[in-house]
Length: 161
Ligand code: 4NP
Image (tube, rainbow, N blue to C red; front, side, top):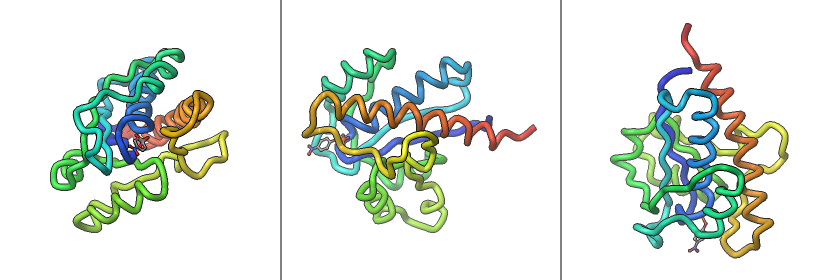
């Protein structure tokens, strides 16, 4: 696996991308690869900047053994597109917003969609659970666990031997 820096992005950076960061960190740690991949998350809006992740997401993720520790922040194109190798959006609007702030074709190449890495579950985006119930948060974690497995396989396939 090559050294990579991954930034997970959703709208508010309090539900989906903090969970994606936590699930990815948890899976990497269990695989003994957490020192090779740096994971962070951000939102396309700054409305919740400085806030912990949504309590419902923290609780449901903890129930599966993932500790969500992120503090919400808004993505900053100049900083984040330079610092990260992959910038991974959760839904169509996130992807549109990322393209809108990208500065160059090199930046565009860094933009991915979380469900690009899904294997078993047929969702084309990670649905926003914010106005939903616990089942919606559980679905997000199901989708993220599946996509993170695929993302780890993708990173492994980039290994240079
Ligand atoms: P997230 O969920 O993008 O997964 O963090 C949301 C969080 C906040 C809002 C919408 C979605 N909001 O409207 O404040």
